[in-house]
Amino acid sequence: MSADLLIEEVHFRRNWINPYFLGRKSLLVNLSDLAAMGARPYACLLSLGLPASLVGEYFEKFIIGFLEECDRFEIPLIGGDLSRSEKIVVSVTVVGYVASGVPLYRSGAREGDSIILVGDVGVSELGLRLIRQRSSTHLKEITDLPSLESWAGGPDCYRWVLAHFLPEIHLEVAMWLQEHKLANSMIDVSDGLGCDLLHILEESACSAEIGLEDIPLPPGVDQITTASRELILDGGEDYALLFTCSQAHLERLKQSYPPSYPPLRVIGRIVRGEAELRLVSDSGSEVYHRKGFDHFS
Amino acid sequence: MSADLLIEEVHFRRNWINPYFLGRKSLLVNLSDLAAMGARPYACLLSLGLPASLVGEYFEKFIIGFLEECDRFEIPLIGGDLSRSEKIVVSVTVVGYVASGVPLYRSGAREGDSIILVGDVGVSELGLRLIRQRSSTHLKEITDLPSLESWAGGPDCYRWVLAHFLPEIHLEVAMWLQEHKLANSMIDVSDGLGCDLLHILEESACSAEIGLEDIPLPPGVDQITTASRELILDGGEDYALLFTCSQAHLERLKQSYPPSYPPLRVIGRIVRGEAELRLVSDSGSEVYHRKGFDHFS
Image: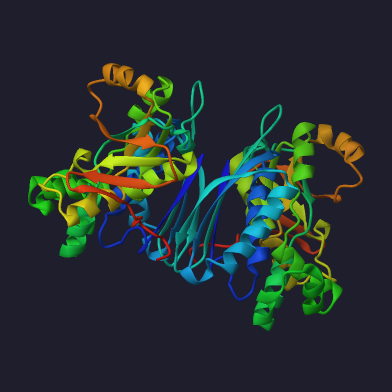
């Protein structure tokens, strides 16, 4: 079971996202927490705090979006609450299970494991920056993808905004890894690649080296600069899957991984030592310092 | 499973309740939702939104209170979230189960059932009124019962405030009723006796008559006046248990009901008809009109 809060003006702005997309995203980010453990979704609960003025149309659009994702992942909405609130509050609880074996934890990484990334990093952050830069209130009226594409004005910008509104979560991949016992540890990248990898290192009591050139760059970003480095290491809300796989299983993983899934990218390895992340590139190596999202900064 | 939101300035005021009591109450009111179904608590999740200034001492006191009630009811806190928020947001999810048989629902009331109340009504509302009337900011410093008693200044006032801060929930009674199959329908009185009984009537598609003289009056209230009537019918947050029992089972219920439990009070009966509640007293009978707490009024 997992629970996540989304609060207006902390996690989103009413002017920058339509309630229909917000409803969809609210379930997606919670299901990604189940994906992080390799669990299959079973049911969900939704508690919603809304200003009285939003109880009509806004509520309905939100619920339509939320229930669409419930349908897509075949889970029922089994409970929750509705309350008045000055700011919009979305509190979702999800329940999942593993059919056999044990769920994947952050604590299972072992020396020698390969560190593998499935999905993008830094793309959602680019979407957020674009939205913030344009601060377009027209955006909050948009509920369909063609209009969003036209708002974005180009294929890269569209991918950025889409990643921010409707992140691609990797439940299928995660369940497959759990079922085939091919991952030692796993997390979903919600706060940022560097920060979330450190969570694995801290709970597994080990160290890691990753190759900066091995991390995929977002569409529209061509080379590794100080700025793009920060983007891929610290950009949050992409919900990529980050896991570790022992050397003994790596070949089997590569050979049996379904080609229809998003590509596996080996970006580094687990080494002995304290919970520390080393960034390796052509120009040398250095220790990563956490810059991920701090809710109370 | 059940989820409830508590939001600052909607459900409570930071100046009127200490975080330690708020932490305890937050779990209690959620466990009362499990009691309503006759379910045994199994686990809980807590998502908390807090202003940055409250993350230290306030958070700690809240958690101490919350975990004290987890200990008392022997359930683990298995997940949740912590986020920044302008107003305090408490979102709790509880999980429970019934060891055998089916949970109790609002929809099971049948013509001829006796309507039975366990616990008080109107007492928490008197506590809230007292607190509001005195608007004492000293109250938010109080975390122990002797200080609360001395703040209250008398035994009746103390019972009122205590009911408001630490409602007595009736999990044991509820589980016993479910286990012994002695209730047809059940609900916990959170919005008010009239309003919550109407929930049973609506979901069971039947009508009810209750005797105003059969409802217990709060301590310090001597007679049924227009004001005290409103208090016992519309006062919320007492978390009394309201259930219906068939005539065939009523004698067995009365005889086997453990004497250590709070007294059973037969306050009326289910009759054929539309979802309507009739209030019967010496001076005649009339239809009850819902006045329970409306979150969006």
